[in-house]
Length: 171
Image (cartoon, rainbow, N blue to C red; front, side):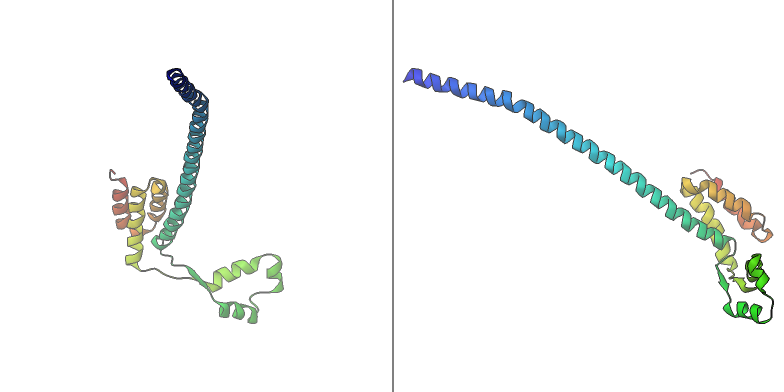
């Protein structure tokens, strides 16, 4: 009986060794697969992060451009249908205008009205450009360009000086 017990114990040890020897490669394979999956997930997250950042940059730039419009005293424009009708009725637009693209110029000159912006809105927009340019690196150069362009408007001279001071402050 003693020999049989020893035999069973030796079989148990051999079985345990066999399980370890046979199971170890599978465990290594599973670990390597998991690491590869993890690496792929990290790459996908980085791609998503870059894509999201690009989308945010585009949206921010669009909003920034809208503020530039306000800083330049523009709140959009309006095309008067009545005005266009009058141009036709009075013979100001002829069939020849359609051939040489003059119609576009005549409508722009006579029937498109730019909607004005109040001085307070305009000055706030100018300061906003500088503040955003200072806060967001992607908007720094566009802010400088916008302020440079707006500096040619004499009525904005004082506020442009303040805005440039804000933009050039250390972050």
